[in-house]
Length: 112
Image 1 (cartoon, rainbow, N blue to C red):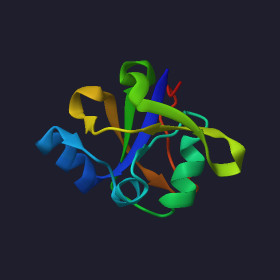
Image 2: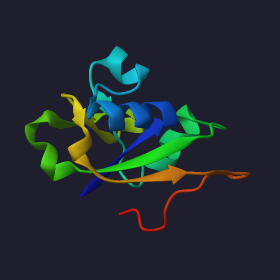
Image 3: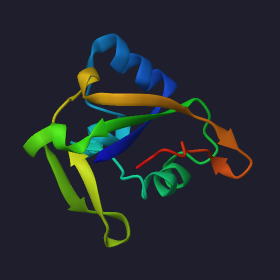
Image 4: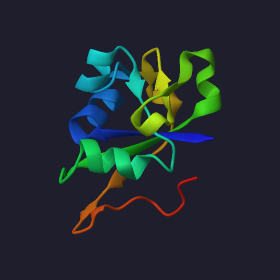
């Protein structure tokens, strides 16, 4: 199962350059890296990145993260995936730009 992280361009560039990250500022504050499922990603973008350009959608295989990934109740009582370790560039399955349209961010059709 793929899970998704939305990064700003500078955050994605830093992960590529450093090979690892503790995440975005909210992740540093909370002590874990926030991810979303395919069904949660659009709401995450609308809530936390409304109107933002220069975003990247990063896909990670949840099974490859082992016990460092925990599913915890968050927004609206839904279980969200949280990573309790650094995210490594080698964790990334794919990364795609997340363009902004008049109706919000446009997600890839092949998200599963």
